[in-house]
Amino acid sequence: MKTFLSDLRGAVMATIVIAVVCCGIYPLLVYCVASCAFPEKANGSLIVAKDGTVRGSRLIGQGFAGEKYFHPRPSAAGNGYDGLSSGGSNLGPTSQTLNDAIKDRIDAYRKENGLKAGNAIPADAVTASASGLDPHISLRNAKLQTARVAKARRMAVEQVEKVILQYVEGPDLGVFGEPAVNVLTLNLALDSNVERQVAER
Image (cartoon, rainbow, N blue to C red; front, side, top):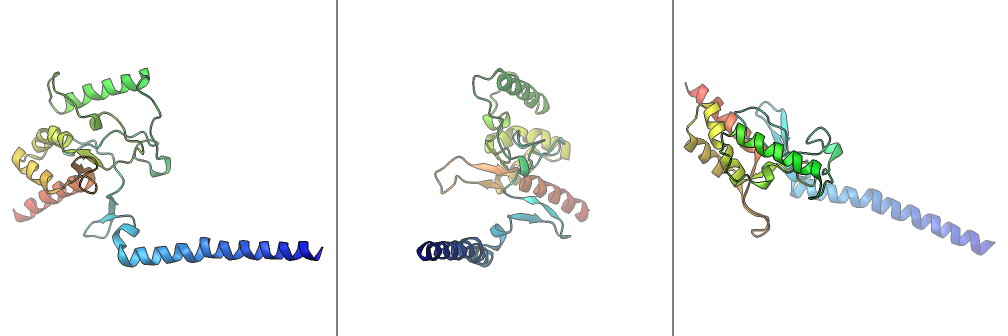
């Protein structure tokens, strides 16, 4: 009996020590190091306006529907871009539901951007990402939306293209993926550019 109680006491103490280290000290240490070394990333890569309001995160996509905005890729997360319901549609390439949805998205994309029936559409313009929260679109996707955005904002296409190029992000680690554009930062930059032009007048 003494051996049993001794073993039980040792097991309980070991559990308490491991819980304190793994659930308390270690997370606190990681948080402190991250907050000191990478404060922006540790706090969610938030984009804060001049008036102090949070406009969003560079890591999470947002829905934009107006003609003057670049539109993100579709989302299957909740009602769209819901961080609490992150996930894909789980529909495979043989799914008729998915094929019909893609066809409808292609038609809508061509119509809203004034494209001809023969124009190839980037995959990221009509398919959702696995997380449903992808904040980026491909450079080709952005360029196909440029004419619409420029017209709605009464800007020259060249002006909008210049802003796009300022926000192009290269492949991860220089080799993984392709150049992409963060939709939120691009749209905020365009809004800021319009505000600046109005102020100058």
